[in-house]
Length: 163
Image (tube, rainbow, N blue to C red):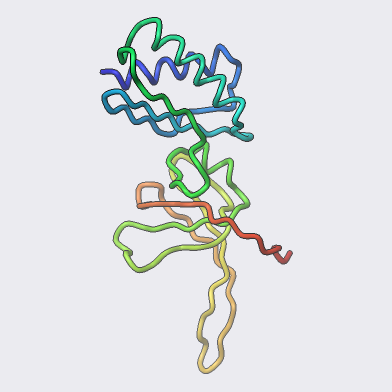
């Protein structure tokens, strides 16, 4: 399968270029179009994407995996894309996250990502609860099993957080 060949080639490029902080998030191969989406524990830069792209392109050209005409796109996974891997969750601890949960179609959990592991994530948020006729703010940390996450995205905010 060509996807497996590309995955091995991407791993090889990351190792040989000494970009150990980078990792593959998504790969799409359609006939003559290849899209590679990377992320990094630090930051994924244009320079890193370009070097990885050239490394991969050299192998594709030499071994003629896709013929003469093809499109290769190596880029960042992007801010608005759903998180898929534990490394992405860990990297984003301390940032705002919106989580859609299976079975809770209308409910979204929105708050600060405070912990992440292979099994679950923890999201801190302030909830307004009614106590009689009064409303009370309650600090809540919800542990969400990864198996229950339908989609999780980092939300970018330009407001300063109150500490």
